[in-house]
Image (cartoon, rainbow, N blue to C red; front, side, top):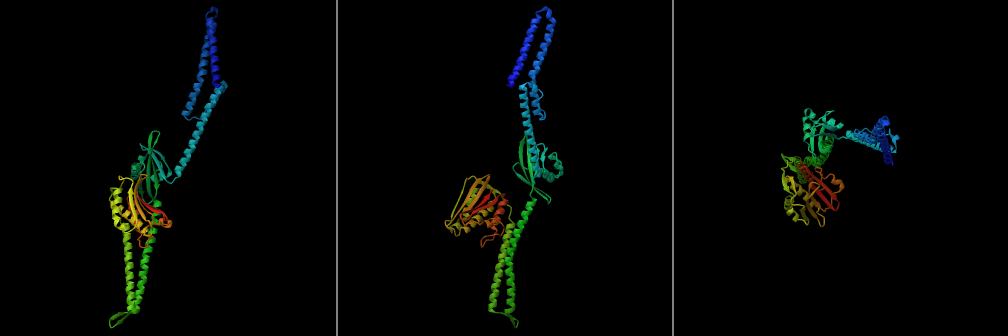
Length: 448
């Protein structure tokens, strides 16, 4: 209806223009109406101007609307020409509704920006982003604290102030992480990702201080180690000290001197011999414990080479074949692909696998239909080697502590094997983990 009203107004002006032009043609043919014809020409020109103004008003309105959108001027409104008819009122209403929608969208966008900016500024992780030219796009409060510059405009300004951190920020690759240490206060882990924003490449780097967490973990590790050392040493020193006192009493009571010759009663001699044997055994046990500690703390650096998972598993199976023959355990091994490879020190990883399989053999001692399986497979961009047994499993209370040095659930174990195995995996930038279901299965997993 609005556009019909607009067409009607245009048609009316055209009709009036046609009538005036007809009148002008008539007047030109009358010799006594030349002056009136001249006036008619002025009227025709005025009608043309009015028709142009009327028809172009909508275009001017549309141009002003688009400029308002272009320059985000959502305050202006359209209502001045509502009196020109229903079509203009409807058009003005539509323009105003669109501008209101843009105004709300911009308001919501600003609210979201403020919300996200508040979160970014409050998180403990430092966040900094910069483009290929080094212009800093975003930098939160913690990043400023780590960097040491409150108002960093370009990342290259950091080169003079802190060249080491600058180099790490530039060199860290997308999807990878780097470590940066500054004094005793900061140990930063830097992770990077790259984004495309409005056609420009932006590098986003997060900086997280892990010094406090590492110190807590280090303290907890030392406390656990000290507790175990104290326990083992006291287990050996206490009986040695007690036996030493007992032997001294035996010598004082049963040892007699006759004419420069010492005599010892048979019973005292037996007690003395037994006590000395006990001291010797406990001393050997303490030396063995210290040797295990030395082995744990003095591992050599791995000699990395490319090794096929198939070859690795077959070699371990061959080494353990004589020992497995002495048992009734069903031992099997397999791999998903013959092309699976890992970058490892062959001897070290073989030692880890041998240790895990031997542990499984001991765990299956009283298990009917005992089975051990070694599996090589690929999952989530990692190569996995699993040692699976169907033994009694590991209780939840122990599963959290089995990788602590010198902790053991076996009567004759040293408690060093699993701790040593995990340390070897960490030296290979890998991981050793365990999952256990009581009386169902236990799975030790080497992840590379």
